[in-house]
Image (cartoon, rainbow, N blue to C red; front, side, top):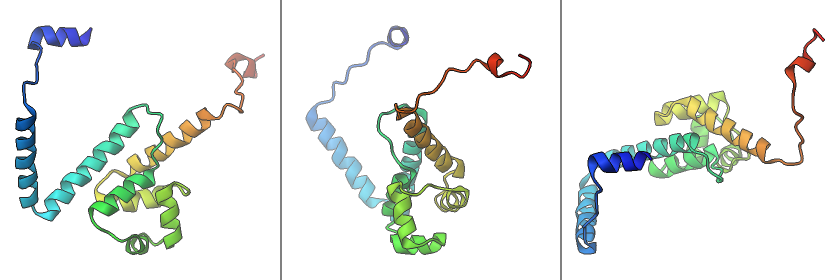
Amino acid sequence: MKDKYFDHILGKQKDKTTDKERKLTKNILDAYIKELPKAEIAENQRIGVKLQMKSYLENETKETIVAGEFLNRLLLIYNIKKTKFAEFLGVENANLHALIKGRRKFNSKISTVVGEAFKINPEIWMFIEAKNELKKFNSIKKQKRRKVDLFELSHDR
């Protein structure tokens, strides 16, 4: 319904761009990007990861992305060695690898340090962990949850 409303107001847009024009545009953009300073490219990619994190939180997907995967993407963008970053965090190298793989969870300390380093709100890291925990809990069919009648639990009965 919403699309029809916008189509009526804005008119339907048709992409009349040819493959040749798309390729030319891509080549122009690629040339432009090559001229950008590395720091600017990294900053744009960092923002992209931050947007991916927010999108993951806001949208329901079957796929589970551990918070460590987003950290790994950031480490790759800035070409930071995991051993050096583990040192920075004050954790064992094995613990950083477990964090990246999702075998360990982001806690408030790690979320804060990583959040400050990459300018991404620490709460986002914690929310990703919470979302994944809830997905995991809700996917377990073996656990039968009883329906709750709050009045039955009331001490007034």
